[in-house]
Image (tube, rainbow, N blue to C red; front, top):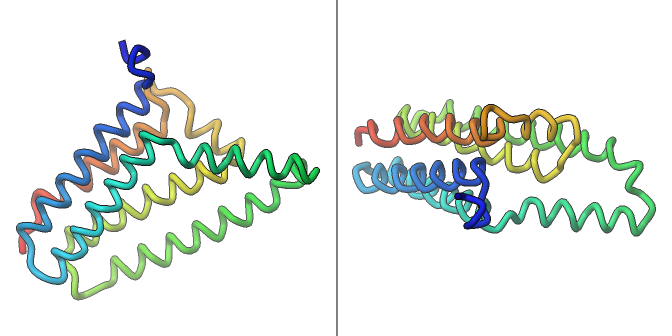
Length: 169
């Protein structure tokens, strides 16, 4: 049935996950005070961007463009070292962002947790864009009809929704 709409179970999981996360964050923004409300708004916006990303698949288009560019330059075979360096850099940036967020004393615990989960999701999208084959094989391994990456999106979204909907002030 999903094929009729040009969508697979993993994409559907992502669509539902990010609609839920964005909505929960925006509800938390309405119920919170400054500076938490501003962070909830930003998290709602970012999760909305994730939703748009699932619809349009820009990460795959960027990857395909870069592959074509590397092949045209004859550099495709040497890409692994660059990919690993980019992934290490992205992981380092994500870790620093999560640590800064988690140790912020101005923000409530719920918003820090939701922020950390959103950064983790952003890191997943970045890893997917870089597309190191061994990581792709893991992320796109199936757990039933849904790929592992879809399950990770859903798990993170449950955490974001839980923290957003139980946020106080």
